[in-house]
Image (cartoon, rainbow, N blue to C red; front, side, top):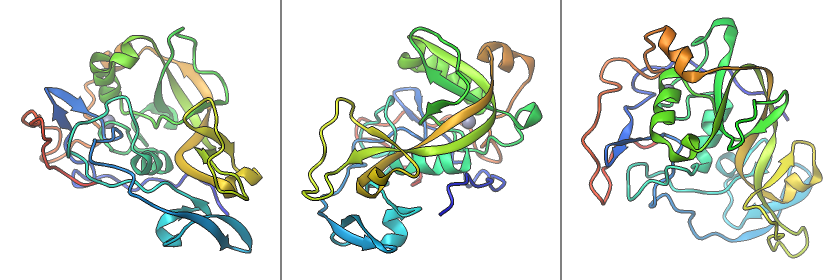
Length: 257
Ligand SMILES: [Zn+2]
């Protein structure tokens, strides 16, 4: 079983669609929309790769499992309904974190900064720096998207910390842990429980986020960083990055993820 974060492929504008807007605000690719619901499902005792685990009654392992771990199902209807600007779509988070794509525009972040480093931005009311080995569910950003996020995201305006990161390591998942016998969800104070790779709890977890740890972290001021260069967005190319008309209150149909 490999948890290696794969090397991203070169991005074209077709892979990184232009940002959707909601009442004039750019909507990050990561944000879930109200019509991207979790469909009804039945959890069962399954047998997978030689041991009992949590499964779906109508499971399709090639789609429902990643590295043997069962994942939450969530509709892909980006642009339908109302966006939750502070939320994360489980499957887009997984894709962005696995390939280290910008969480806002969806473009590659590899090769955007000197030394192979990547820019991470996390909420931090106290403004503490990103620590060595800090766990995060937030994928990286390209510099212009980080600046946009600081301008527009009320959560980040309340406090944030940014770092240039040399290495991103897989750590585990965040998800809903179920009792191995009853399959009832084990209540926890937090909405999602953090489960490291290698834990026996992984077999009974419905994963909703990939968690990574950040290493070789250097604090950075995003405004200073972006002021030094005229950076295009990771996904910018022919036709990409043009502002879209504001979405109607029923949402604007755009790209599927
Ligand atoms: Zn970006």
